[in-house]
Each structure stands twice: as C-alpha cells, then as structure tokens.
Image (cartoon, rainbow, N blue to C red; front, top):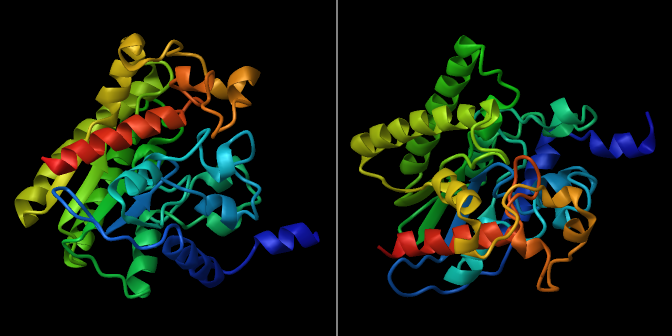
Length: 303
C-alpha cells in the first residue's frame, strides 16, 4: 500500500483519541455572564458545524481549497461565530458528512477515506461519553444533523425517502434523550438549510425532513422538559434567497465556489465579493450567512 494511504487508514481508537483532542482545544475556556450566556458550547453534527475535524482526519486533504481551513465554507462556521460572540469555550465533535446515526457519507464520495465511515452523530456522542463527558446548566449543546441521512434520496421513491426520514427522526430523538441523560439543559437544534435552488426535489426532501424533525423535538420536549431552541435555518436562508437586499446580499443563487472572484476572496480581507453571495456550494452557505445565523441563535438564547 502507498505510504500516503497507509497514513489515512488508521484504527478508530486512534481517530477517536484525535477527535477528542480536537474538541478539547478549539478555543480556551472563558467566563461567561449575563442572560443567555454559556461557559461552553458542545457541538455534535455535520458539515454545517464542523470546524475542521474531517480535515484533520483526512490528513488535511478533504475538504480541499478553496474551502477555508477544512470548513465547508469560505470562512468560520456558525458555532465558531457563536462561541466567539458568547465568549464561550468551543468543544466540537462534529464531522462533515455525518448522518444522525453511526455512518458518514464521505467514503461514498471519496472511497479512500474509509477511516471516517462510522463518525456519525451516534459515534460522536459515544466518544464524548467514553471520555467522561458531562453536561450542565452552563453548557449549550448544538445538535445540527439530518441532511446527510437523505443524501441521494430520490423524491419519486417515496418509500425510501420516508424510511430515511423516519430513521433520521428516530436517531435525533435518541440523541436528544442521551444528551438529556448526560445532563444537558439547553440544546440548539437547526432545521436543514435550503438547497441552492428552492423547490427542487432535493430541497423539498429537506422540507419533509424538517417537518418530521419538528415533531420529534415536540415529542422529546414533552417527555423530558428539555429546553430545545429550534433555529429554523431553512426559513431564514430561504428568506435571504427571496429577499437578498434585505440582508445586504446581491447574488442569491450563484454558487460562490464556481466563481473565481468569489472563491478567491480570502477570509480576513473583508470579502467584498464573497459577502454578497449566499450559497458557497450546492449544499453549504457562505461564512457571512453563518455569522448571521450565529447572531440570530444568540438572540434566541437570550429570550
């Protein structure tokens, strides 16, 4: 086997240990104060909230440039902005490609990354638990997943789509119950974001998923009394795409990654070009959208 490939195929125990280190060193602990404050933000989920874990697991190969430092965007993602604005430590277990269960879809896209095949949300929670993780009233948990469960689903195959949505909803319920058992008091959960073109089959699949997940949240709240803040990323971003000038965007449809002037507009430069775009690629949003979402989530947590 080629030396490079040998480095990529390592045991999950090693991978788990590495991820635990990544989660623990995202930012330094800081004291928080005031309404809606937190000392720590603990994250489980997929590419919407992964701040570089998949990138590290694939020897800094995937996702590749022009994606920013392994994020599926052109800058920091929503939980990084949230951590910064709330002055809270970020402990991040999310892995791009994660489903709500054990699996990860990345090896379906790039087969050589078999080492991440079982890094779904269930695995992330197991690693947190094995490391002795506990949650309490000074923590905010972010759970952001579900989209990858319907990856590649065909809308005309209603039975398969329904099965996938039911599986995602059941997994999310188990994850929330597990978080509650670990001591979680406040959880932020997001709906699936709209695709780059609203109303396509892929986008509508997400609408159906979101409806099921909302019912799941209600069921868990009734069972546990857990404080779950549901951020409707779908509705907010759909509004951005429908009324871009309201948010200061000028290009609501074009994929930034496909436009050299946008894709090369480096984070830290003010991004005069990229800040006018909403869609980074067909499934992910630009860092400016992530910052808007973080600000809105923080406002919701203050209520």
